[in-house]
Image (cartoon, rainbow, N blue to C red):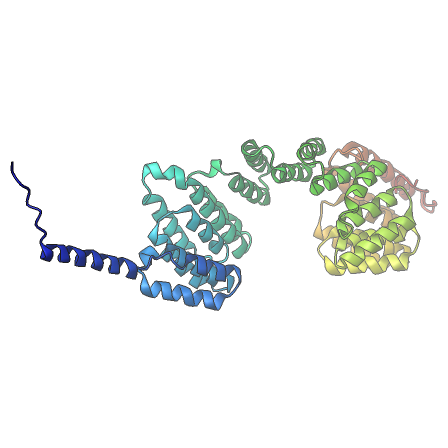
Length: 462
């Protein structure tokens, strides 16, 4: 029977023990790169920025940058919070170099792009980001890339001046490889198309974005406002109703529907809509302005004036409120007060022909014919196709016994035709032509019979 050798070799055992001890010492001396991440995050949310920057500096001194993506990212956020945009870009660029196209980093990059617009640098980065991703990775980063293009186009839009900004911003968006897969991109594209008066394309862009996000009430409301701008009240009303079907308390759509009802002289229903939102938004100038004009439509002039004064208190420089107050004072036959508010509206917005028309009527009632005539002429110069200014000028000339001049103005209006919207609450083109023809013939009859008295014009024709 053989025996087993159980002899222990002390030298070998000691060397193994020493080796394990050295490994243990190295392991205990090793400092993980993410050991201070909770600390710097806590300092950041406590807004102790100086201490946070000091800790990040210590981490970067002890650890290679390739292992410090979070400290680099947080350092970029700190620079952005302090307004150092260029420095923020540098730090976030270093973080992006550690893990290219990581969605967490790209979201921070998007926010920096809104403040920092170095277009060539951004485009170079976007091209690099797209090329360096493998085909199987593109699906993961496509949302990130769309966000980058979106924020870049938004930054270009807000930095450059019109009309250059619209063209540049549109070029950036059209360079996006997946523009049709982002509702935000399509919504912004629709806004730019609307500014270029391409309303048809803007409507299609809104519709496509709504197909992607059918319950997005902001998109639906924006489409309704575009219909309202196109004077398509039927589609606008339907679209606003669709938005309210998803959110019955969505204030912008409630106000839009109330304004449509108001334009169609449905004062009581419009007031009921305004009262719904006025309880929570009694600080809104637009709401009180519209409520005041509803009372004006119902001939409750004192109530209208009270609401408009409140709107004027909330927004003293809103020219629409000022001119509405002038109209109410005109109805009250207080022409001096009316002129005061009309002049204030003109001081705020001197390029609006409608304000000049109201001022002309007030000056006529104040017997200041020279300035009234000058205001009519300036209004027509600002907006030659504004039919109401030319029609009122003809009436003004007739009151000064200048019937030939009045007939000439009315003939020009008849010959040019009236491109006016056929809304229920307004005279359409045919009715206006009939009215102008009727007044013109009356003035021609006066011209033919010298010394005849001025025929009385009915209130409706005025």
